Image (cartoon, rainbow, N blue to C red; front, side, top):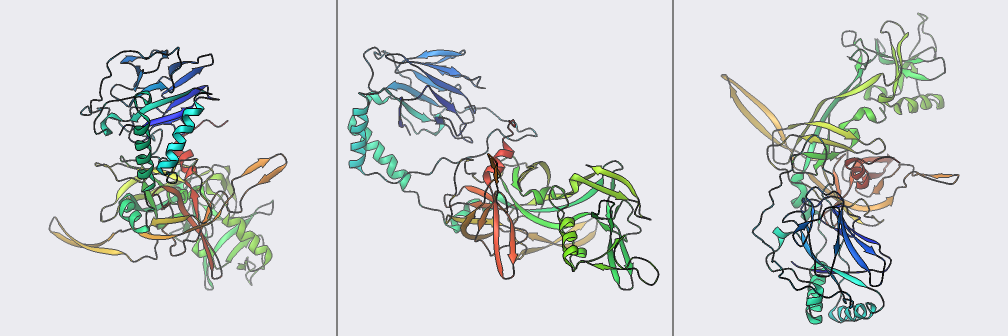
Length: 561
């Protein structure tokens, strides 16, 4: 529908137009695909009366004034029609009130061709769209008719002291039900009051979405992610193993104390007839959600690229027993005995082992004795051997690939090849603020949830086979933002950061492993974060989510200043 937007001129030198959310006139990033991110700007020339011109910022589809394409810049006069791309969004520029030097031009205004269809296919290459789907700011509180009347009176009085201009009809042509364009100078006061009151009432009539609403609306866009990765020695291309010794007393992982006192895992490229433990993760799962119809999705970095996060302690290490070469007592055969990490020194060693980042490098040893054969940074690399997604109600998985992972947050972008458009979620804007006490809803696939299993029978070349397949359905949980984390910030000689970094602490407790990477929604149905991990201490438990701004920074690659 047509609308009037009136903006005070005082203090402005230009009015930015485009799909960038920071624009003065911002268009919908997913619907208004004809408009460039930084399409054009209306420049205010300081004089009495002021002058105006429009400047095209090299937009893909061009800027048109009264049907003529702008080549660089062109002057603007009240009543001029501005069009962003051929048959794109169109609006009328006007001044209210018009000064004496600006007489209205006599010309015929063309009405919008609502039957026109923009045929601008956007082939998605192996890169992300410039801007992901983004929501508009929440509507303000309701305003009554008397208040609107007073606001109109105040605005009329204010224009006697400072120029104001109005931009009318900022609506995509194919979305308008009919009617021509008209400027604020052609509307009477009662019409302005009636339409403003109607728009405010419609905006404030929106109610918060319940968890049931959210899972019904966005559950189909949330998928389970199955994963498995292995660590490789980059120079040789061979998989890496952790050496394990098997004795009558049990199996013990081996560690080596280096000359500098650090204790590291005895890593080798020899599996010694499967006696050693492979380095990596198998048989795990997480969650993810679609952000574009052609297959781009968001999930956690520790789901899609586990080698880029601290390795942690593996199940065979969690009992705190192992053998450290160069430390510990000797057994009766004069060989190192099993050493348990049940001491302050031992806990310190375990903490260092858990904090190791595989991608940063380390030391590779011979399998026969702890002699280093390769050491340094970046000698190891991780590779996904399994990364696939399965959407709700399906028994078939689709292979995915890692596109990029954030260097500073637990966020990654993955991509699937799809033959049909995917349902998508709606991301909150990067500048949208969250607050403590805000209600949130989380979707995902925690391992503790009940599962729906299908028994499938196939007959291939006369061979009848039966198999079980999980038919995923998302689990919905809700809670509050109980605390906001602190980003790394350096000011003067003081550096501040949160103990868990830039993360939102949640009271969403009825979930667990497998929910990592699932979307966290606010009550307006916008994704404000990615569920990432939990922290437990005795019976106490809290969960965390990565704010969506970290994903926005990953999607929109920017130059680092």
